[in-house]
Image 1 (cartoon, rainbow, N blue to C red):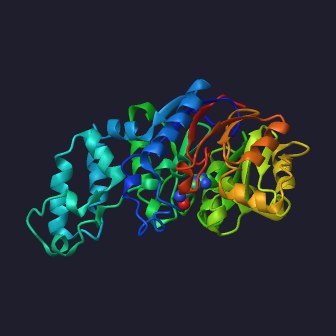
Image 2 (cartoon, protein in one colour):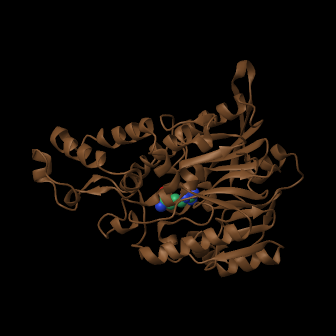
Image 3 (cartoon, rainbow, N blue to C red):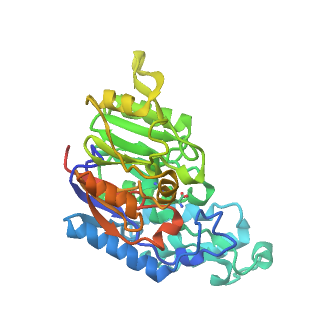
Length: 395
Ligand SMILES: NC(=[NH2+])NCCC[C@H](N)C(=O)O
């Protein structure tokens, strides 16, 4: 397990195949569950299977979060931890808590994993010993919330070299996701001995904001999800651990369209990014390096591209000039045109619908593996959001 870049050959990736949790979305809850529409579940699964197949076709090992979770739940300690986590929710009250506990105790690891991801509605459990909460709840209300955004595995953990940062998600609808990744990385034998770089109790950082620009350089977007305090904490940790000498904190607009840094900028080569053109010239960065007494030093802000090139020790960080008119650029940015997943330098996966961006990438010598994402995209995430690289060749 090792990741020191965004682009070197991808060997192992963590995905989550969406399932019953998507079927929980309704026009009443989709906004708070961070979806912009109601996906057609079976088609979303087909799209996701094609994405996984495209990766396997390029020699990438695909791990599924659902499988790792079910395997983790065969361990009594992990099972107890994850069960206690959902039972601690204040909405339950004692009587309903006892009923839910009983229900969970009856499930085998596979089904329990499913429940932890898809959630549990009131109508799925029996009243047990009664209680006011059960009596007063609507039958469609959740006693365990579903996690439809688990699909975006990029956000709930991120690898920096041989360590994993289990993130601290900012949006209420997503917080519980990291209880799952936290348990998997600490209990699953595949990750035995892995040191955690970050944990969910810390200041907010989401993986979509973290870009490993070079083996010693990280960029962290700061906006709707990652806070300045989160960026500072992660920067301090990677610098102290000797995993990077420089971390760039990059302010991005606090808006849905630019919720993470990877919605506007991803790497397609060791020295090249594809970037939302309406933003390319205005992005800025604060440069964080090691300071006296094990602390950090902050300077800036400077133009992002210049700060990045300097930190990376290259003359220039190239921006693939998509040359799009502002309206097309805005449309394709919304549909995750800039959210590419590199399988290797100059080889990336992208949504097929972003016709113009993809054509420009190819013109610039970047091979594009196109996948369809009409349903997957309703959650506002592209190939990079839907993947957490666990192993890449060293750059
Ligand atoms: N790395 C990313 N850009 N992830 C996209 C996450 C989308 C998800 N619906 C959210 O709002 O959180």
